[in-house]
Length: 397
Ligand code: RM4
Ligand code: MN
Ligand code: MN
Image (cartoon, rainbow, N blue to C red):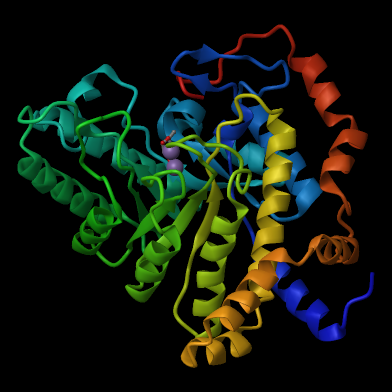
């Protein structure tokens, strides 16, 4: 297929600029609260997670960093930093965001940073400090906090006191950040708590981030919204407020399903990317960490990750190719159908040949999923890892 040079130029520059972080836990055995279906090829050590991540990087050229979850990947905290550095050097993929873990220890039954016990709040805060220290050692910029805290029954906790404790905790965390570091504040409406969640939506996250300080930004996990919520509008608001720190991409049909990006509603991811491209074109300050947060319970881990990255690139490119000048004119003139056709038209065009051309030009496999199959990587790890413990840390991952 041949494309005009302007389209090629725009496409290549959009794809060059797009990097997406992959999660270490996406390679590990995961399941639901009912159980786990273990896969022989799943990674159960940090070495295996780095090896798998590096293979995804080799196949896609778009995933330079691997997100780490502190307790799962670095159970000895800062002491594990050297091991991670050695793996970075060996595999060529770098450690990315550092994810504190405030949801697995028994003390956290009634909360971590929002626990009524000052002692337990202090324990949670120390873990935040350790996570910052790990990130400093590894030269990682982002500390990405998801807080499980909340309550299950009305009247059983003081929502307002807990806001105060959380505010204090995040301020203290912010004060420890290095000059270049950021605190990404993730929100989620429910689960594991089912009556109230202390950090339940983007308004709470934005308010807390602002109160913590300028290096705190909001993280949007696409699965952490009520059904039918307009996520791209939230994204537009966060951009307007210079508070968009990053994304955890995944897809959902019902709740926090953690399905692969774009599998249920690719148009939604396109609409989110369209907001970003339009803000970029308007010259707004943007510094966004694109990350994947998925749990591949049924699909093969490697296949699911490569498929996800490829889908993200395709949707990113579709949104980049919207004729924005034309669209702006139609929006201003309230030409509704024509405007929608420009927008929708970009979504419906098949950009796969363009991405293939970009890959060929960069010496990358033109069809990453086929290349994964042909490489024999999955067969090899299946053999090597078969019969070992189904571990990998934690009940979730
Ligand atoms: C949460 C949230 C966090 C992730 C944990 C494991 O639902 O999405 O980002 O770290 O799951
Ligand atoms: Mn998440
Ligand atoms: Mn989640």
